[in-house]
Length: 355
Image (cartoon, rainbow, N blue to C red; front, side, top):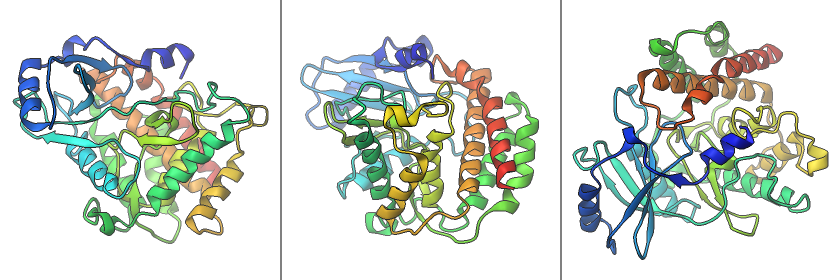
């Protein structure tokens, strides 16, 4: 995204007029359900994010984050904040870096939709994948911290943390292609695209052999992490909306897709001078992940990239639909929606190279 968009997405500000709720009702609920909560409180809305309205709640002694399900007409299964809370509670129990969940509310009468409240982790969020705020000498360590964090997630056995039923096991690519195809075709408001139509036709017949099941984040990017204020260390992984049980290579390729991603869409490195910036090459980054997860290599790497570009295009198609229906959480969602056909084109070209 552009520097202007990065600035616009950073921090929190006044709650949007269409995202307000009864703050007195929330304060009463927090007093009853969050240990140690004591008002008065102020409520601001975080500017970043496209689908889940997220708020900063501040009291004289504490600071919290509230994430709520969007209001209005939603696609079936979309924006399940209950699942977000569930996976973070499970992973936090084994020491993985997620914010602490304080309470979950499924009663829509409190703020209008279900929500959960978690701790606010203090640190840095990097909206630009080139990490311009850190020195060239330190930059590789920040990339290695991301690599290590995702490898650690993929090393956790779902059954060992009570997430054996967090999703279906096996046939991940078939199921995901079917899911995103269905959401794409169902969202008539957002319209059709010839590149997406071709991807829908081609992808099911190109799935590589072999299967694995792990907990996958689904949107593991530098701007969905909170880093230590001064050190190359990930303190918390955020935005678990797309998490499920799935193939770890799909999740890693979705993260490594930053090397192909134009920076004006999401945090990407396409066009960046990696050598000058002292950023690891994609091949070295993939090799380091393989070392950490006990792999010799990743065959059919191009398919995993093509699949993830298709998946992101489908997500942006959904953002376009929410803009049209008036349920998009971010004031900048309209600009994001304009990137949908660009992503669909990138996905088609990647798949043609794979073919």
